[in-house]
Image 1 (spheres, helix red, strand yellow):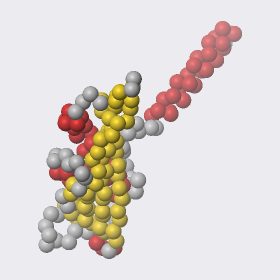
Image 2 (image 1 turned 135 degrees about the vertical axis):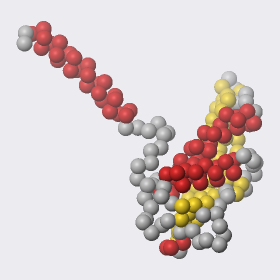
Image 3 (image 1 turned 180 degrees about the vertical axis):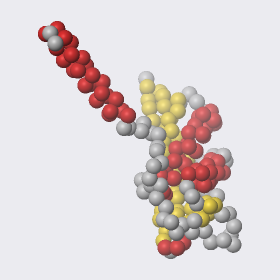
Image 4 (image 1 turned 120 degrees about the vertical axis):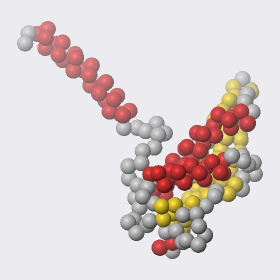
Length: 180
């Protein structure tokens, strides 16, 4: 190998190192997308009951509670081995209840002394009753969704509702089944 070939090989290698580091760095981040690889459910748990989520927030989006309840039910029955029961006569191994505790809008950004961005905050309180262990676990989830200040809340809701349902469902699922 002559000197020019060695220099070219060395320069090529130097150029590839940052590119490889960049790829490795960003291929391992999720950018808000959740992966469900480690669902942990004891073998003794076979059934789940998911109660309709209550909405006790001061402002109530009438679509949020039924849509969130339905999406959580779909995700749990679709991605776990659990069988859903809705009967009050059957004691499910696990019982999940939810309560939408906050649904509020605040100003989150100002530009030229005017509101530029508003933030919709949605909080959910989840209760997981593990009947076989006679144990209750509770946790809160809160997510923020920014939207342009020139949009009404109803316009923002039309654009954000599906994202809200998806992200809240993913986080509820992860907290229950992946210990996040």
